[in-house]
Every structure is written in structure tokens, then in C-alpha cells.
Length: 623
Image (cartoon, rainbow, N blue to C red; front, side, top):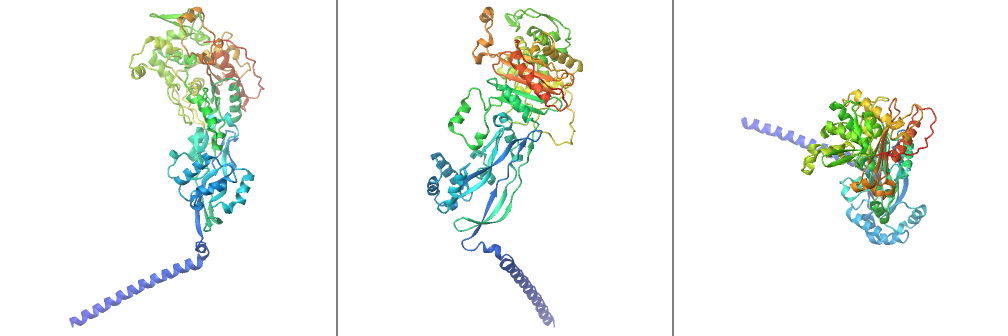
């Protein structure tokens, strides 16, 4: 009985398993049949294109690069159409032979041959290699007519970067150029023919935002790689347009104003929010040449030019600030307890041990207080108060006002300058600080170095009541009209007022060092400070015989000319810093430039209605 039951149980188990296996097989065959129906009936047209000699090619589509526009929407960097001839190695088979055939139609140099062969060997076989860019319509036509004899060769219509303002904006925008081998990251987009990346300036700083994301195209091609039709297309994501704080028309004015000098730089800022309205460095260069290609002669001319056109002097030029640094010494002295009515007698020099430190005015200024000293830029007065304040306190104030460190502006290549301290010298040279070095630093010479941008930031923080404004070319996301107020530097209002009054007297007092560069339009007056920094040491023999005037010296031995200013005095809105390399006196060369720039800046302010006429500037001299 037990055996019979056991047999029946095994029979039931076998039947269940058979049913499960059969059901599974039925499902499998049903799925297979459904899949075959989908492929052979529903997708028949698609897969017919894959038969025998046909195949599908996937090609990346480079996204349009985002435009760069100024604060008013004027395009400063945009894209233009460009025709180029490309070659695909896997379709050409014999690249050298194809190039020989192509050379009978368009001019190809030996350099073109070497470059194409190198890139074709380095890139993936299906990635097109640019043979030549910027073809004329006649060249395009000749290549298309001879297409059957040029396997792997095709014409592509792409876009090229164009800078309509040429050298006027080059040190802000930078430029784009072909991707170098060291910049390849494995991203196929970077290997596309004609693809450009930012190399300098804003183009480099915001390259990823401007670049966008690649699209793709599915192409049906025949056995020899010729395109039959496009099956699908995804355009990708265009690069983001970038809006800068720059006023392109003001920038043009500033650039043209500086072109009268061999080498100069200027920065214009809004003292309230740090917007950089203009930033110029001359001489410059046309950034379009990096995009369309340049000769070796052109490149060698740029890098060997002693005036350094490739350098953005406004952020990377480091200069002794000269007397423009005296405002920092004044604030440090006031913090020490020196009063503004503290008087010092200036006979034209001061002796420290066996060393004599001279004032720029040979016979001295007589008795001066702090206002007089700023107005007349008396070196002896600042020698005196600098000793009372000490170099470390002076350095502390200089750093609070933006000197001695990078400002953090959104532009690559910025230099930090130098503000010395006792510890800095010991760590840098291994030697202790000397009192005489404090006196030299007090007039912005010696180890002290600053960039024009830093001097503009310093001036902005003086003008805006001691607030930590930071320079910028782009604005963070915020609601319309919403600009958070910068933090306070913690400077007593009375101390700032003393310095501001001194800067007012520099320009508007009858005996101010920049009197002849004043703005005499009511409501638009400026306050400023002259500076002249030496680039050579004046010997005792030369002083005894009479210091040689700048105009009688070779250009490279002349002093640098500096001027910083803000306007209008009653409600500061704009500041400007100018450095003219080997320009001589700050009052004679740099101050008139700043005056003209601040006049134009205020004229372009919608809140300013009165017509503006430039003041014809005669000239004075100051150390």
C-alpha cells in the first residue's frame, strides 16, 4: 500500500514539473516570437538600413558657444559661420594619398600634411580631422565637385568665434583656440575638428559654461562612408550666454585714451558694488588671430615685444604705488593716535643715521599737517608718521584695503603684489627689518608693489566709507535691484573723512598737486591722489648737480606715473586707477587720463543730465 502511494506521489511531482517546464518553454517561445515580430515587422525599415553594405554612423555635434555680452546686452564675443574641409581616416583608407588628391584642389602646406597625419594617427579612426579652415565658397564648390575622387573627405559648416571689438577688449575676454594635446581629457567633444576652448580671460574662466553640451546625429552611410541620409538628430545644449558688468562703449573710450601712451593700464569700478565697468591694458592684440590661425612671425612678434602686449597689466602688472600709498600710511598713523593737525617741518630731507631721505620737493614744503601733506604729497611728513605707526601697522591697513593679496576677481592671471612686514622680510631674505625701509615703504617704494586693480579697490574702499567691496565681472544671482551691502572694514568714519578731504584738496585746492587735472563741472568733481614711482636709484652726485628730468631720460629710465581718484565727491559712485609705465609725473601724465575717464563714466550714467565738456589740461609736476 505504501509503495503504491509513493508511486502516485512521484507521478504527481513529475506531472507538475513537466507542466512547469512546458509552460516556461511556451513563455520563452512566445517572447521569442514577439521579439521576432517586433524586429521583422515593426522595425523592418530601421534594420533594413543595416543590411549588407549599409551601416549607421554616430557623429557628435559641437554645441554653439555662448555669447559674451556687456551690461547693456551688446555682443562682445559671438559666433560666425565657417566652412572647413575634414577627413575621416577609416573612410579614406590611405590618408596620404587622399591628401595628395586634395592638394590638387586647394593649397596644402607641408605643415598641413604633418599636422593632419599626426592627428589622424592619434585620434579615433571615425573622428574627423580638420584639414583646412575658413574655406571660400569657390574652394567649397571645387571640393564638392571632386567628391567621388576624395574618399573620407567632406565639407562641414561650423561656427567660429569672432571678437568685433578686437584688441579693445582682448585682456578682458581673452580668446579661444584649438585644443592642445595636454588639454585632452578623453571627452570626445574635445577631439572634434574645429572645436575651440578658452585660453585666456573670461573665455577661459567660464569655459565650461560657455561650451555647452554636445549633441549627436545618427547618419545612414554606404560602404564607402558616404552619407545617405540623417536618421535622427539631437542638437545638444548650447553654451550659456554670459553677461558682464563691462560697459563696452566706456571700455572703448578708456582703451583709446590709453593708446597715446606706449604702455599703460586702467581700471574703472563702481565703488558701491564692485562692478568693473572698464579694464584696459595697452598695447593689446587682436584675439581673432588665435582663432583663425597665425604665422610664426606674428607669434614671435607678440612674445618678443618688450611692451608685453600679451600681459594684462591691469591685473598682472606689479608696480611700486608711489605716493598713492600715502593714504594707507595716514590711516595707520591716525590709528596710532597721530592727529590730523600734527605738524612736521619739511626742509626737503630727513636724516636717519648716516642716510639722508629726500622729499620730492628739493627745498621742502615747510610746516605741514596731514591735510597739507596729502595735498602736496610731502614725503618728509610721511617719513615722520610712518616711524610712529611702524611697518606692521601700515601693512595691516594696506591689506584691509585690498593690497598685498589677490582680489579674487573672476579673471585668470591675477598677481598678488607685495606688502612687506617684519616677518615677511625675515622669511624672504633672512635679514631683519630696518627703520630706513619703513621710510622707503611710507612713500610707496622699496618692497611695496601693487597692481592697478588693487589700487582701484583701495580707492573704492576709501570712497565708499570703508566697506569691503570686491571687484567682479559677473554678478551673482539676485533679485532685480537687490545688491547686498558690503561689510564694514571697521575704520572710524572720522579717519576716513580726513583722508577723503586730503584727496579732495589734491585736485581742487589751488595748490594741490593735481589741480590742473580737476573736473570743474558742478556735481561731478573728483578727489584723487597722484603718485610717481622711481624705477632707478638717484645718486648723490646727481642730486648735487640737479636731478635729471624725466623728459631728458631714456624711456625705460623714466618714473612710472600713477593716479587714483573717485567721483563725484559729494556722493562717490565711480573710481579709477591709472598706471602709465615710464610716464613721468603722476600729475602730468596719469591725472589727466583719469579725469577724462571719470568724466566719460559720469556722462554715461543715466542719472547725470548736464552736458560734459572736457577740460583742456595743462600740466604740473609731482613726485
